[in-house]
Image (cartoon, rainbow, N blue to C red; front, top):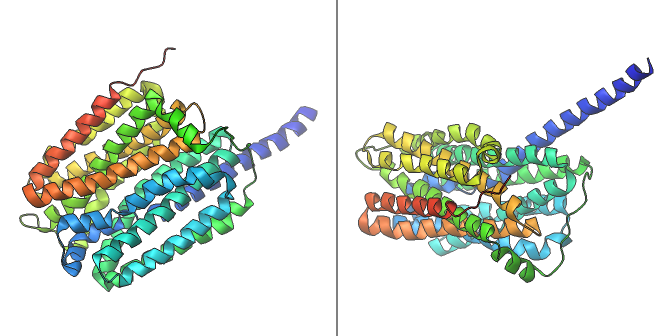
Length: 403
């Protein structure tokens, strides 16, 4: 009888823990979604922005993706100040501040102002995400943190899909200004969600501390061959992702495909498969190894490239779906690989990885924009193939640890 009485509270405690972990996972997925919903939403209205600002696709593509400059800068900068920032407060303040440049984009008078506001958006998005990851590491058990991190990645994937769809729909129905006002409202909703939900979370683990200055830690990370490979692969991943989904918009709206601005948002349903495949990337990488996981995901993305050259919507959408699944899977694999490979201060290693990752996106927008303007879409696709091959080559040097 005593055993039964002892078992009841423990069972209830376990059930309460599972419920709390599930709630935390859902909340973290929503926070991630509302953090990144602005990042690629403007890509769905690129052809409209080109007409409004009277610039080339390359110039507008660079401006829209200038947020990656802010993302990279914040990924490095946060390593200097993160230890002095209250995690919860830093997240909701970053999201509240994110709404300001988003709101001002509605009245950006020229391309330079538009670009600078996108950089500011990237700073606040990256700060919010980095602090969210630190929050999980410090306040959740390892098991709960893994589930919440998977939810964050899934929320990121969902933001790519629904952010583009919402942007295309709102801009087509109510205009460009209303589009940016709407997304500023989403930023404030994210800040409110953090303020009211994370306040009740109790500390579950001690804060990770590491000795040495940030510069010393960076040098240690750069001496780590595995981390160098991870940084390079991350660069290639976003190079391909942004290079593809920025300039394919111009292919889709012109003849012979001729997708309407409203329908362009629905094209991004191609991200739907990635929502289901990305959360399992960590488990698969653990089972087959990072090298095989990278090769499989990059090969999947590569299989989609030839389909982008077919002058019909269905094959292009299939190609985009394969690239989405492959690049998101590779990104999830890389996130875990960096965390496991770091020998000190995993937060700094993650920040350096994010900086390399987003610089790759900026390079994809800048380099492939020039290629598109001068040589056309076919040359762009060849450039994407070269980047994927480079990532696969880097993965070949990953050493599989001995049992």
